[in-house]
Structures are given as structure tokens and as C-alpha cells.
Length: 248
Ligand SMILES: Nc1ncnc2c1ncn2[C@@H]1O[C@H](COP(=O)(O)OP(=O)(O)OP(=O)(O)O)[C@@H](O)[C@H]1O
Ligand SMILES: [Mg+2]
Image (tube, rainbow, N blue to C red; front, side, top):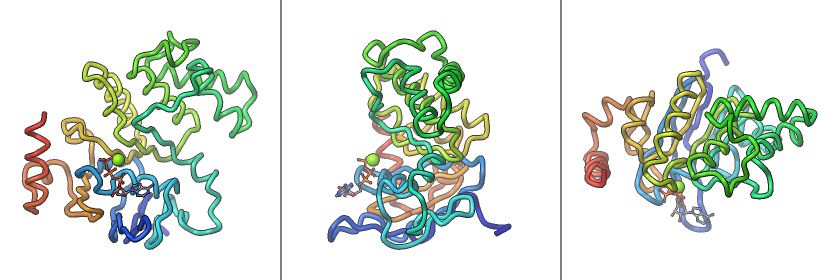
């Protein structure tokens, strides 16, 4: 147990029907690490993230989080999702609830906090993401960047031990991306363990401890950002990075 990593993904394989979408994917993270998954569309990035909180079921391999066997049939998926926060590309906020209502819902319903406690916690988290002045705004009254920050506050209000981000900025207008990255940056500074799918390479370079490059469901290469971006070992990585850079 003692030298086990905080998150250990080992030889994970997954199929949808006959199509194998993950092939023996392995990587590990220590507590407080930031790992960024990159790769072309369809390479399995979202699927890999979703296997970690069992929104998708890996058929082979092992995932261990903080010493627990995530894929064991006995694992309580609700407990797991309480411990693993996720922020998606779409914001998935409840339109009929205010910002504070959206963030307080989980703590109240799932964690059993009183209404007042849940509201206090939601207020704290919304302040943390810079929305202390928008507590009572409804999603339709908020910009995409603000909605995504509410989504992040909602995940944080559950006090997760791991945060998953799946392209949190890719649905946003360019001028709104920065405010969401800034919140993520603050989380990194606060020591949150984060597994992130993003095409924001300068963010990845600034905060990642490790970059994992996936292609066609396989880990082609992984390493610290300086190495992977400056000096990729594989020609496939080089080509992908060139293509990304030419779109920046
Ligand atoms: N629910 C599903 N049912 C069937 N096939 C799926 C499902 N989800 C994903 N796939 C397939 O699995 C493969 C990996 O998809 P995934 O969404 O993980 O890729 P991705 O790297 O996140 O791509 P993108 O950058 O476009 O988000 C693709 O071939 C996709 O079509
Ligand atoms: Mg995806």
C-alpha cells in the first residue's frame, strides 16, 4: 500500500460493441498532481476520464483511487462519484435553479447538509470561483464562462479528492476561456488533484506534471510537458503537436 500512487490506471481496455476504444491505457498520479490528456478527436480521452468515475465501464485492466479498487463490482458508484468531481464541456446546470441553488443541490441532497449549511457551502464555492456577486442569478442570465464556473463550484462543493475536467473551455467564446482557466489555475495552486482533457496547450504546459498523449485509444507517449512539447520521442506526437500549433 505504501508506495501505491493516488490514482493508478493500469492496462485499461474498453470496447463499444466490437470497437476497441481503449487499449491497455496506463498512467498514474500522485496526490496533488495535474495530468493532462491530449490527443485527436476520437482517441478515447473522454472515455478514459469517464472510466475513472464509472460513467463508462472499462472491461479490462484496473483503476485504483486512493487505495480503492474503482472497478470492483462491490464499489459503490454513488460514493465514487461523490469523491470524484467532474466538469464537462456543456455546463449541465439546472435552468430553474439559481447559481447557489445549483451548487447547493448536491451537498443538500447527497451529503445531507441542512438547507442553510448547503447554501453556505455553495456561497463559499461560488466566491472561490469569483461569482460571489451572482449567487442568485439563473443560468440564462450568466455567460458561458460564468456558467462553467458555477459547474466547477458545483463539483467543488462535494469536496472531491479528484477533479476530472473534460474540455471545460471548448464550448466557450475565446474571450471567456481565460476566466475558466484562471479558476482551474487557482485549484492547481490549492493542491487539487486534477485529470484534465484540454486543447489549451499553454495551460497544459504551465500546470501539468505529466502530459499523456492518446491516439486511437493507446498511450503513444507520456512525460513532463517540457519533454513532451519540446522533445517528443514519437513522430506521431510531433505531428499532432504541429497540427495543434498551426490552429492556434
Ligand atoms: N457511448 C458510446 N457508444 C459508442 N461508441 C462510443 C461512445 N462514446 C464514445 N464512443 C467511441 O469511442 C471512441 C473514443 O471516443 P471519445 O469520446 O472517448 O474520444 P475523445 O478523444 O474524447 O474525442 P473528442 O476529442 O472528439 O472529444 C470514438 O470512436 C467514439 O466514437
Ligand atoms: Mg471527448
